[in-house]
Length: 324
Image (cartoon, rainbow, N blue to C red; front, top):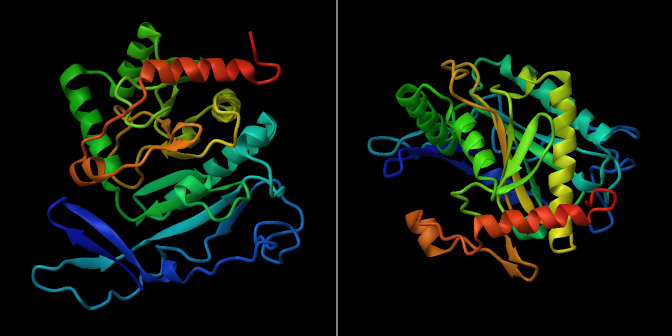
């Protein structure tokens, strides 16, 4: 059973998904994403795999029946997919050739376009969780895609702020943020022709970065061929810099922020970008979002964004063939 339950204090819908609790622990010597498992083709480059334990489905399930009066529920409409990066069980995004990552970008675009055809889908969220520190139990290189039947709260807040800025200033908020960070310089990490990477002035995560498209476009399918190549290049570079930072496979959460679909036109004020949320503040110290952060939303970043950016720039120089 999956359903949405309304939280009137936060004005938000919460997913209750009982089937996620029944996910089995896979044997250590078995991976369903590896060729030979019987679950995936024997040969593939990148692959879309329907999640075996989805929190959302396109055939609307019944709700639990606990709703009524003060309590509001509705069925969870959507789709959950796993995006496999490579058949090799041990390779990370940072270790893949840029040409192979470009295939991943193309698959993201294909899935975005196909899922957008379902008018009940309102937001397509592409993301990756990497490392046991963020709860990953399947180390095979992969990300996920959640196609929501509503616009999630954080994205809606970002959309609202972007619209307000556009109305008051006549400019895209992300464009102005990028321009300001480039002018300041202290928090810039790296760039190529189409993308810039920086630790935002207001970062709430130690070593958190934004990967921002230099041209104003709202989502992946709008990127030209050059921009798609450059996206593959910049993803390889920033994930490589993360791995070089503490000389270890670096855990992170990666989230692609794109414009919603099948709803109001946000193209004038919403700007495609990627956010990285790394949970480490030092090689042996994890950053936890504890009571103040979780209960009050009062975030405390213990690493200066300027120092974080400097450390990431230096880490990138350590990558063989990249150093100055």
